[in-house]
Every structure is written in C-alpha cells, then in structure tokens.
Image 1 (cartoon, rainbow, N blue to C red):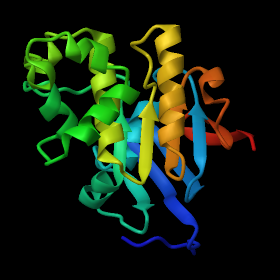
Image 2: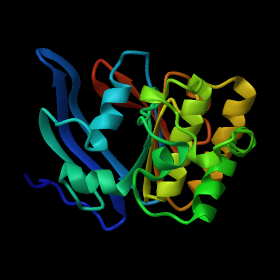
Image 3: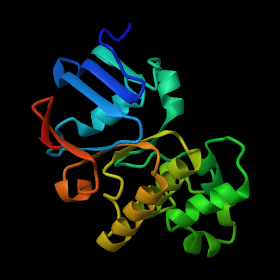
Length: 224
C-alpha cells in the first residue's frame, strides 16, 4: 500500500489514516502524523489510552488495522524495525547475558557496548558482577530489578544507533533522580535523530519540539 499524499524529503516518519484494534476494540482511530527528520515529538495521554500501542505499531511490532506508516520511505514492518530503536515501558529481556541483551546477537565492539552502558548508568552495577557483561539475567530478566531491566533496554537502544528513537515511558521503573539523569543522557545521544516520545506525564515531554495528545484514539495538537 502506498502513501496517497505527497511526502517531502525532510519528512522522516509519515503516518496516514492509521487505525489499530485489539479484536473489536479500536484503540487508534484515523491517526495522521508527520515527523520531520531530526524532530523531537512528544505525545501525552492517559494511561491505557493507546500510546504504547502507537509506538509498537510505528516500530513494526504490531500489524496495523488500516492506513499507512513509512519511516524514511520504508513501509514494511521489517524495514521499520531496522530503522528504529525502541524503549518500551515494560522492558523486554531475553534469557541470556547482559551483553547479548544489549547487542541482540549483533557483533559490536566492547567500546560501543560500554559507552551505551555508561550512558544508561549501568557500569557501576556491571563492574560489581563476577561475570560482568556476560552475567546471565535469567528468564525474562528474572535476576535483575525493574530499574536494571529498564537501563539494559535503554543501553540496547543507545548501542543500536538507529536514526529514529521511539520512547514509551522509558523511565517508568526508575526513581526520579535516576530517571532525570537518563533522560538527559538520551537527549544528548538523540541529537540529530528523530524522536517520538510518549508519556502520561506532560512534564516529561517539555524538551520536545512539539507536544500532541492522544485522546479517544485520535491525535490532538496541544502545543507547537
């Protein structure tokens, strides 16, 4: 399916008439959004209002119900996944080592992994572990805390170095001080990238270029 409207060269994420449903329950209803290359867009909304679903659909993790999504001109879910680094509200971890959870099986120099861990404030904890980066974290990350799991997910997104960053309440499992420090690190590393950040706390989106609200399955521009 092709986009029916003209998309400028500066557009990086283009969403047209997007709908998504869980069974008979429609969560996203005729969403239209254009995000320019290098733009940082925030989306606020109540918990359970579809923000997480929107992020997962854009990232190619869920199939859409109707409409079109393109990231840098790519519409297939597999290509969109390659172009995005995603930090979800509930970190998804594999029954493997810290290293493999960050690299997702891709070959990466230790310097890249360690730099990502430093930015995610993981290195002090990792250095205290006998196995270091090769420490096994258990089934679904059962051997690490919620905060540690979220930091690993953030380090994974940083190490991937994708041109688009999708954030779904990335600091929800962290205390206020650590969360603020991590958001500062993400902001510094997101320079020159395209960012879409969803949160139920508007204050968490104050550094965005634009803020919209997801309400009743539709997007409303509340600040530009």
